[in-house]
Length: 289
Image 1 (cartoon, rainbow, N blue to C red):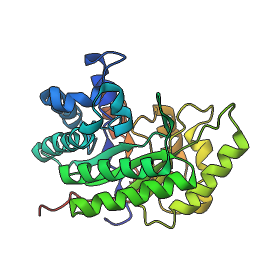
Image 2 (cartoon, rainbow, N blue to C red; image 1 turned 120 degrees about the vertical axis):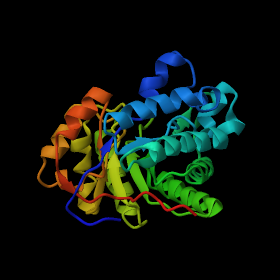
Image 3 (cartoon, rainbow, N blue to C red; image 1 turned 135 degrees about the vertical axis):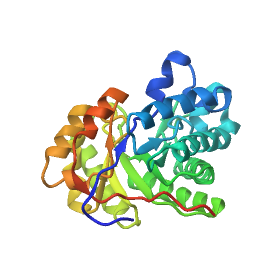
Image 4 (cartoon, rainbow, N blue to C red; image 1 turned 45 degrees about the horizontal axis):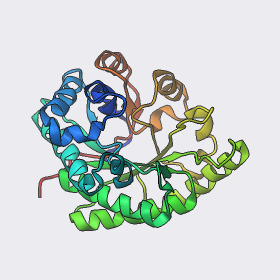
């Protein structure tokens, strides 16, 4: 951890958006970690050259239950490990300090099998976090459904994963509003967020944020239901749009608490870098064993 007053690190987006054209709409971007690792590293290098100080691993869709659709259920650890290792390699080549954050997204429901149980969420978190930490990340960002049971399961799995990897790193949480069957229940969504934030605040996380997903509310609006229970750093989705980033940066109560500033392209990254804000940087580059 570093002291308050340091500039917020500028982050590249999750590489999936840059890699999607290579696999098509129905392809598996994460499989490129195995099949075309040089291509994944090329995307990382583009953003490092543009000034990125944070890289996200190419592992957003690497949960075993999601890879099952591509007959890759048993490759979840390998895919996630390689995603971390590729980003770590590029970060270590850079002329400036670059941190690597493991991108772990835990779905609440998946095709064919439907809603995931808490045991399945814990197992997926254990597998993915173990792989990311073993692959060399500096921190892990866990995107999980905003249900207290799911948050607890994800954190339990993450702790087991770090134990298996024999290395601890900071854990950040993105709370994703849970969609209830039938309709969007705004009041229930806000209550779920508040309860999940209150629980997460007791779990020694490094940062908490929200990922609106598909619901008709913005991240700044949803954060209003989280911040009463959380006074620490605020995480953003790697896919946060420019308007969200700008709104939060301009908020005098939030701007200095952001964990990183995401961008959508190398050009956008260069533009964002012109912004200089005071904040606490959450993680240092981890020391070699």
